[in-house]
Length: 152
Ligand SMILES: *[C@@H]1O[C@H](CO)[C@@H](O)[C@H](O)[C@H]1NC(C)=O
Image (cartoon, rainbow, N blue to C red; front, side):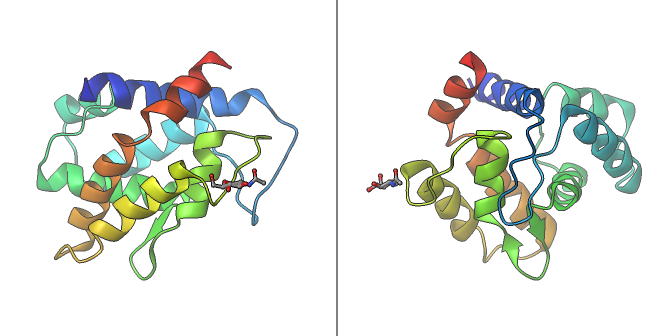
C-alpha cells in the first residue's frame, strides 16, 4: 500500500506539468517530471547512492537507511520544500501537490496534514533523518489529494 501511495504521488508530480499557465504562489514554481529526473541524478550522485538504490527511488521506494535519508533531504531541498535552517515549507508542498494552476486553500485538511508531518519530526537528531521521516509521513498522508490529482 505504501508503495502504491508513493507511486501515485510520483504521478502527481508528473501531472503537475500538464498546465503551463504559470500560476505562481508565493513565487513557488511547480516542478515538473523533468525537474525530478534532474534532481534525482544530482542527489543520487551527491549521496553516492548505488544503482540498486536509484532503481528503488525511480519506483518511489525509499528504504530506511542513512543514504536514502540524505537522498530525500537533497531532493526536498532541490524542490525548494526544505532547508536545514527552516525545515519544511508547508505552503510550497501544498502548491506542488495541487499542481500548476490549481487553487490551494491553506486552511484545509490537507494543509494541516502536511504541517503535522513537518512539525512531528522537527526534533529529529539530524537534518537527513528529519527530512526522511517527515517526508515519509507527508507522502503517506495525502492519499485523497493524490487520487484526485490522478483523475484530472
Ligand atoms: C478553506 O478551508 C476551510 C476549512 O475547511 C474552510 O472553512 C474555508 O471556507 C475554505 N476557504 C475557501 C476560500 O474555500
